[in-house]
Length: 507
Image 1 (cartoon, rainbow, N blue to C red):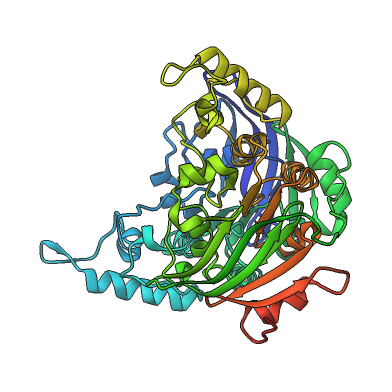
Image 2: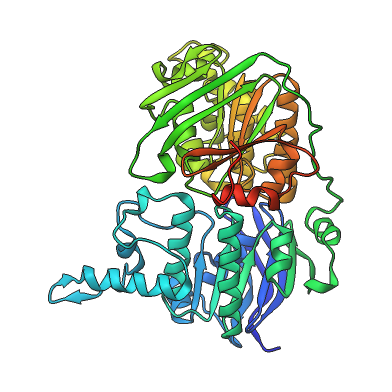
């Protein structure tokens, strides 16, 4: 097959001395889906940023259709060459509408003004063509994470690309949305589109890709047709060793009641925040899994339980205390931990150091000095301990959180929450978008936390993860609990599907 992109000894060293790429060489054939696998920090995103013009290589060369890219290669030049990229962390402007985001930089005009009707019509045309339903007039900041991902993909496809780079595109999609996306991508590939698919999910890689390249520590450790490598071999190439799956032995809820939710109801214009008569209990030492198609009310439930939203009626009690009468600070003081779905919007601050992100509520305890005078050395020491214990790949406590790979940022935030030994932990998509090893590490820590007596509410779009960790599973649909199910060998992702889609109810 003719190579569309060829990497020759590509290297990247940052001014701070961090080496991201070490002589990477391989080719991407035109009209194929080429997967790139590797743990967080392996160099996958850096390599694609070099191809897209967001980073400049320190050495080596990149050819597009046989033509070397120049030193002035930029996103504008990549766009002109027919390269589109959907980033793992969205590049959308939340204050603008979907239509305004999609036509940004190439706005249709009507006289001296932007033709908003034409922009909306363009969005509807693209949404129908690519089967990614979005509303053109909704502000992006009000969309669910999954809906924002659809907008990102549409924005890239809107520019008639010949090569589409997808960096963890399914991290925020449900299994049904993922299959719909894959079906459309297969059709686009059949029409001649070349796809680069960056993913940690080997099942998805095998579903979509024809060829796979594996990176580890900035080097190529494997490059072969997908049919030549089994999953164990790919995982070994990714990690440099075998990785064991993490499973929790099921156990009945014998600990005291930690969380009681009864008749919780909340109206909202956005279905993701809407709740209707939610009822369940959660006990110490128990993991309750919460499944559901994105936007089924999970966000509203988490908002109520973390003090960000107020219910209209119903009861939510944490250790016998009315959560509706407590703000977030009071809930955390009582022992609430929260690992949010968006590690940056709610979990941490990109521009602050790891030490600042790691101290969390610890400054209230006096361990870091007497408030408001905190010891920088004590904060750095605490961060260094968490970095070491959770194997966060970082240069040190003073590095900015935003400088870390997604998985390492997630591990730092998880370390902060777990280190507080919460009585109740709400883990919302705890392994979304992170590599095999990091995911296994966080899952093992969740199990340890439950075994130490914490109650864990686990919300996950990864149904295999949900079933491997939970004692019981509740399924949400349209703001309601559609099913409460005991976990066991007969409970499979396929069995959960009808409840998630509202085709079956067993509440």
